[in-house]
Length: 442
Image (tube, rainbow, N blue to C red; front, side, top):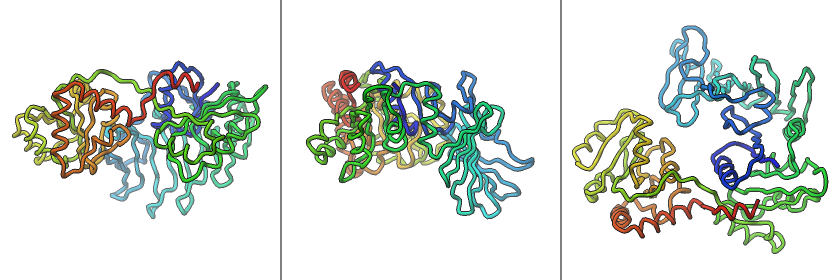
């Protein structure tokens, strides 16, 4: 058995963690590799380039990007750039969280400011791949390098061919599907049962693999929205002569919609199975609220401060704070943390039992998710909610109805049963599953 994911995004991470919590132990393969896969995840690219993780892995810091002599590197907490005599010659992009300035890609520009090449750096700070672009700034080729900076994989985006140099021999594949199938067979993985979460390449790979005997038993974890009819590949998966399939839909609303679209026979393939989350602690009903922001635009902060005098508000920012924000220090129930350190962030997530997602600008430090995993009650406004997946719909208020948020905070801090009910709604909104549901689908 293997897990085969199209990409290692948040949805794949959550699924993998849920599967492991349910006791699943099998190889995990990701097809699209950005160089920052987890140590327990492999891709055909990381395997053939010898990109093995170690404890000494260190990403490339922004000021160490190789550049011509005397060219200048400038950086913010969001991204960076390389200049020559004041003219921009490259864009530097960081991994999340961007304020740590770990380089993931450097786009090199021509005299007209067009992207002509992109260097992709991995979690070890090594040049992992390089993409070339044509005049229309469309990618034409990607080269993947081994530890000695020698090209071992060449991917042609125009013809979709992939050339692999392995043990001194060239292998040519007409598609990514062929390339992945070769890799799986070369690794000797058992593919008579595949768990996948995409009807793109993972599904095509499954179609191209014939089980050693009988029919394979696959599970598709569906993590996307659904249109007005079932996807063609989903219907095709139900009819494969050599592979049986069960489909676990991870969002309850999507599952309900699928049941309305599916025929009686098709309905038998579907189950609703959410995620198994790991909570770091219990909610202790402490009257302390955390807000993380990268600007001084915090919705309704002064009405909240004045109407909730018994709640202490902690506001953290990874940068300096403006005078507008610092002036809030006149309220006795607030603490401000400009240039907040990671240790203080962790301390506040462990200490506060309310998380207010009310900053108007971008979310920082994956605040909503971290709050969710710390069993903090998350409240927000319709204009500020950054991640609705972790917030119950009834906990998102019209911005003009701050009194409703105030009333909710007062209620959950005074009655344990009300806090428990609010947290239950929050977990239901995040499609929390139970262990038995996973054991049943597996």
